[in-house]
Image (cartoon, rainbow, N blue to C red):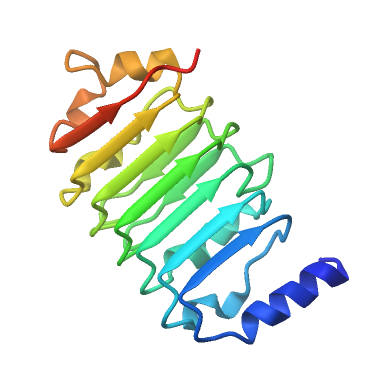
Length: 178
């Protein structure tokens, strides 16, 4: 970290009462004590260039209800997102947008048990949805927009991935990107 990054992280580390945090710009690593922020319920990451192992810190945030991942939230060489079993216990809304380099997304059974809204847009590398979406029994709204035509084909009612999302009452499927 450069001195500007260190200074920003020191400021964040000193604000234990925060409930909403937006991090924009390269930081590579989150404060290790972030899980000790009891009031942190909303987090937005944009162009942070986080290392892959930082997902483990995010998943352990006990009261996080809203997570928005934009742009290069993770390093450019990160191609796989993994949401582990037991991860994100309170998450209700997840937005994943403009994560172009992600080619695979895994959602393990038991991850995000309270998720009710999921928004995915402009993730050109994804050609299929995570198999684990079928485990998200509280998911009430799924919005997919500006994704590859192949993914759109797979999630149609007669597509090979429809079984993953057929339990979701509100499916909003926008135009394909390519």
